[in-house]
Length: 409
Image (tube, rainbow, N blue to C red; front, side, top):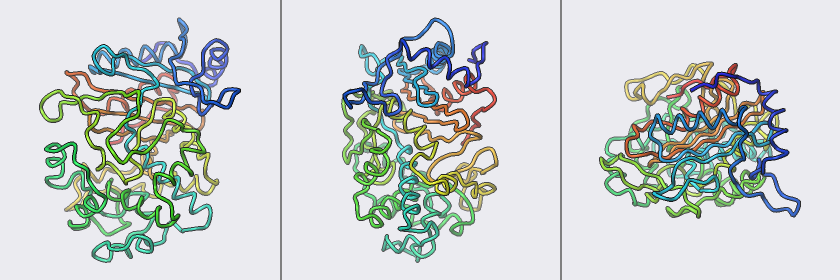
């Protein structure tokens, strides 16, 4: 649903400033109180009219239309809260709340991309260095053939273990299984490359498992500590953290899915297969909005590093091959392409994880300093799909109609 009245982001910023006079700011992009403590992540007091109310209407419509159990949204303009709201329930009788924690999936891959580019900025590595300098034991001389750039931009040619034959069957047969990095990379490297490294583009989780191991060797620091020191800490993401177990810090946004044929809780299914150990994270909506602006603006990078993060060198890649299907080798175009651990969707910089009943999305529009963060969970009649990304697109269309978010996969 699109609001009938569209405001430019410049007008949004003015409205936001007025709202701030009467609205409690909830962890606003790392905002801290006078005592040095981060403000709590709470719902806004919404006016009767205006862009904040329009965002709420869009979220309410999406919840009804898609049968979502919960919808949590936060939007900021130039780092100032426009709206924060939570709809629906975490569990039966337990209202959803902005402070609740959920899994952020591939958002942590954007953190790895930023951490890698910070090493480049510091002169510790070059993107075209072969990964074999730090990660030994990759078969078929892959360590010499695959570079750090290819891992970050997902152009290595490695098969995605998630889509490999039988992998999903094993995950759903035992969703509590703890997968190791060696097992995951082994699934991918046991299969022939989809294409010669660097010549095409395809999303492969294996790239980021290996990149995580390389970052640990490059820096001599465990990945969870490195990301905290290099990304989450500097951005003030106090509610974003890794766990080596399926735990989620309280308060928990519970997830539900019918992926195994029965609508059931999936909150604590083991996410160890989703990315590199040390980058399997949880967050809340205020941190996710801050993440959108901090990563999307290149706040932690040099100008050269920021350009490299958004580098359109994957444009024109993504061509299907005999071994890499069209559903995996998605075409990279001028409208949409993959940067260094993140998506560039038109004028927006984005990530949108989807697994085990959770969806989330962070999106940032640099020209307007507009950040959108969304997470959703499924009701019993939900048809699945990336509901957070759909909702993010609708909010973007209402708040920045000249900058629509294109579809990606």
